[in-house]
Length: 311
Image 1 (cartoon, rainbow, N blue to C red):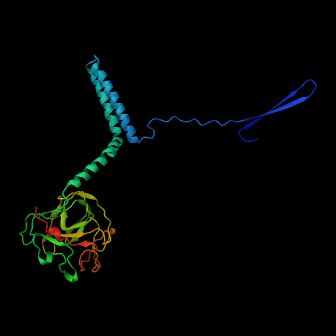
Image 2: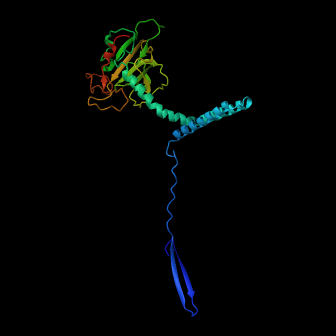
Image 3: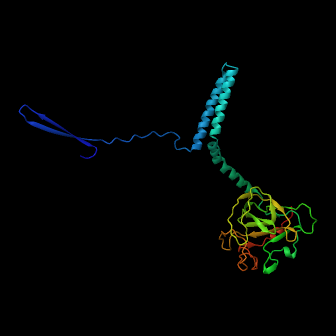
């Protein structure tokens, strides 16, 4: 007998002793599944459901308040009812705050990002001179490509901040030449710091021999021959104060040493490594004459930044 079936046997005997047998097989009919009624809003995110519940609660409280103020009851009873309703509303909102905050963030965050992007697109894109003051002429040793000890070449351009000035004078601020994201902050040279910014145009500016005043900075790994991943992403805008110059411990001068990188090689390939110093590279450069810069191959000549007008 197969599952889901049953056989019933009937036997009947007449007066002459004859017997008749009847068998009836009963098969179980499958019961169709009961479809659960779809609950309205069951597929909605919990944040949306929370907001709907709070709106319903607000409507109910509003109706109760209307009833209280329209009724003839006054005095202590009305005040108690009002306090209870406000307490219920406050507790409900506090308990649901995470979902409410997530709901409105999901709505308004893209809008805020779009507004910020629109504002950035309408801002001037011409780079600013990163040091407002200082001489606009360059000494031989400050220029890009100037000879250094050991056959090296100067990989940046120096903005004079304190050459021969008496000690104690306030040192100038360093400003963001373009908008972008700060990605690294580290010890650079002779007790000074370096700041790397990926600009909105994809290039990289390396502001060095300063100390930064930006909030949220953490010091990255040492840069010399040590790859380190980008561990920061701090948004800056054109003209923001990045920090101020500090005297180095080599000769006591305070200058902004600025380096510029293309971000891609000559074929447009993005250079994934974050290491800008290459002591072994004195012969492979895509955008500048071959010299002993000991830098990444996408090094650019930053002299045009020094030629920008003071502001």
